[in-house]
Amino acid sequence: MTDRTPDPQRLHIVLLGERNSGKSSLLNAIAGQKAAIVSDVPGTTTDCVSKPIEIPGLGPCVLVDTAGLDDCGELGLKRVQSTLEALRSADIVLVVADALTGRMPDVPDCSASVVIPVVNKAGDSTETSTLETAMKKRFGKEAVRVNALNGEGIPALISAIQENIPEDWNTPLLTAGVAREGDLVLLVMPQDSEAPKGRLILPQQQTIRELLDRHCRVVCCQPSSLQDTLASLKDTPTAIIADSQVLAQIGPLKPEGCTLTSFSILLAAAKGDITYFKKSAEAIDRLGEDSRVLIAEACTHVPASEDIGRVKIPALLRQRAGNGLRVDVVSGRDFPVDLRPYDLVIHCGACMFNRRYVLSRVEQARKQGVPITNYGVTIAYIKNLL
Image (cartoon, rainbow, N blue to C red; front, side):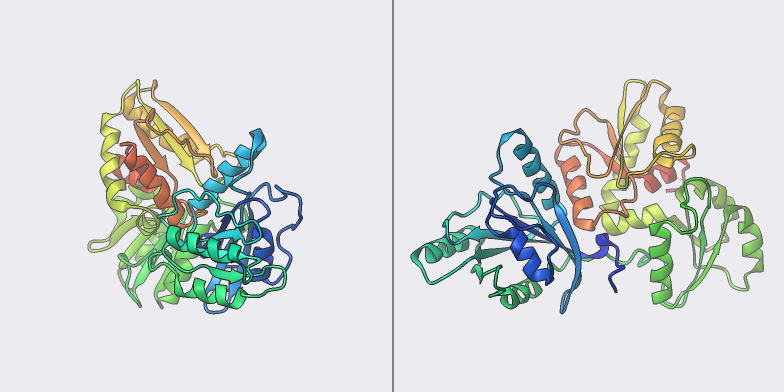
């Protein structure tokens, strides 16, 4: 992996603490460069600052600097909310406390992440010892002493991160249950108005790269040339991976013994809870004129006339439930805290989010008793292909 590794495939390390505890200085010290603005003025860090880096022994990572948990006022509360949102994607949380103030930050629930307590500006003082004792009692492990301004303790902190990498942080292989090493795999990829000019969308790129890394033979075609492509192949493909919107078109042409799936379903299995997604899809049969559905897009883009989330899926749902069905759309990090007004949440493949963040949204819906599925599972269910 190189600097071009997409952020969702990087280890996410989020720095958490009060204003002026040294989070930005610590990020710069770990990164070895001035990636975040440092100032003595409280509240200098307003929006979250992300810095993709490579750390020896860790590989591709993302360091995320956040606003202080003790920020106040109307804008301050919004900054804190942004910090809590960043926390949802954290694989590792560095809880930073300032030894000079001796205060331990009021940290929210970080149980989904590995927490490493850090005492900044540490010295041989009663305040430092007292703070370290409090942090050990709170987080169950010894705090790492650092001085972010002169770099003291940074190697020890990096070692602590290396030793505490969560076993489940990495996204599983997209094609693990679909193809084996050396298999022939056919990818069907419509290049319509939604496809970015001159390049492939991220799920297609990732799938191709992963299959090549596994020494598979990869053949790509448009839906219109699928029949000719199959006829030209000496061997029958082990699997056909297609865009969700053409699954029904491909079904009748699929050779016997060949697996058919979609890029979106592969992402659902690798990043989310595919079992809950499949069970949640049954809620489609219960939708009616008075129902309400939330479409959640990971990326932000200008909608196209053929947009799958804003146009095609709502049209498919209304064909079954009636034109009165209400469909709301959110994008990026916008996601309602209260999902209970919705009868179903349908998420995109989430190629722009890491696994930890997707699972946090799934868990949020599950706790509120709201079914959540994704684009590919939805289309496959409606087309009786699931």
